[in-house]
Image 1 (tube, rainbow, N blue to C red):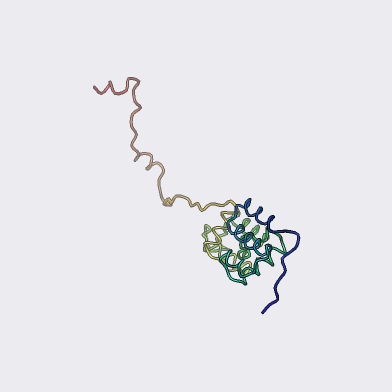
Image 2: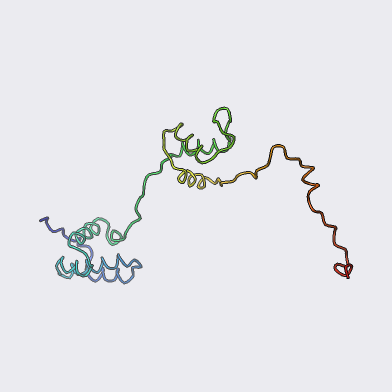
Length: 178
């Protein structure tokens, strides 16, 4: 069995209860009240019952409290995975998107996410999904836009002739029709 860890001496039960009253975080309040019971001379088992946890968890709370004080009892945000692309790689990606593809070199006439993912892999040996690449591009300020399709042999004059052109309404409006 591990040796008991002593609770730091610069706080007392009254101070912890006062901090618990002012806390907006329910988990921190529960932890502070459990540690206040320890300061009152209660056992760690009683503190575990107050906190609704096991003895090991109370020990972890004491270690966090000793290291950082009351702020150590607040759940922090998980750090998450490290980013796939570095800042230098993001700048290169931004440059290649703004410059556009070279059909002879890249084999495409416009960038798609799958093409950019392949370019990133070829250039940096980083495998990135289309979803992650899309998120990266949106963070850089790019939006997923595509031009309206148009047939290469479309005649602009024929389009204008096909449109329905209504005469301009008269000043009197509907009275002309009655």
